Image (tube, rainbow, N blue to C red; front, side, top):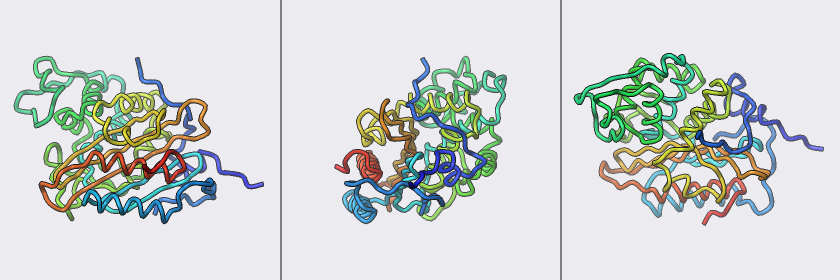
Length: 318
């Protein structure tokens, strides 16, 4: 009889043994290439072949005239779907999820409950929450909520201050095993996304690993992990992206991003419906174009998500 590896073994293979903790299969309740080096489950009957899935991703690139990077991992089976997993893309605002993960790992409760203040001069473009609180400020926890759930750019810059700047975030990511993601600039400069510029970039593989580390691994204490997951699940900016392409009934926690050169991204954890025999899926979908004013494509991210889940044997590619 062939024994499938446990979730801890599979996550260890993908994330590194130091990052693993038991992760609940049940979807969270909001507060009110990448192949593992272990045996994995064989594809189920009817699951598209790797070649067929790759062809679908390539067809999407042609249809949208864009570059596409995808990694999707089902954590219990170790099944992986990948397309350009190690190519660099501008991470744009997806970095805010890792910012908050890093902050939740390093900050005390007193730090998180401390009120931060700023001036009108500190406000940068797209700051829907912080522009309303210049007079009274927000706690660090409230800034984390603004950064993840509303993609508030001034909130992200204030969180950079808490972490010691972009260099401090990069150092923290190195501590959890992410040797790829490189944070150099603050908002909005990190969104230039010039092809070939490695500043403020990552890969689908690295972003999926780091997101999994913070949401499914033991990098964070259980209460802090639940706090991050809650923010991701209640995100307000992702309805047209991974959420739109995921199978019906799955619970999605995600962080989106947009930048120049047609950059449109989403990184997410997807939990299966109650009673399902499937396990959580970590997915990163990154896209870019060739010209500075190329349009972004929400539909490309959603379509790529459908292909990825179909490649894992869940849903249809469309």
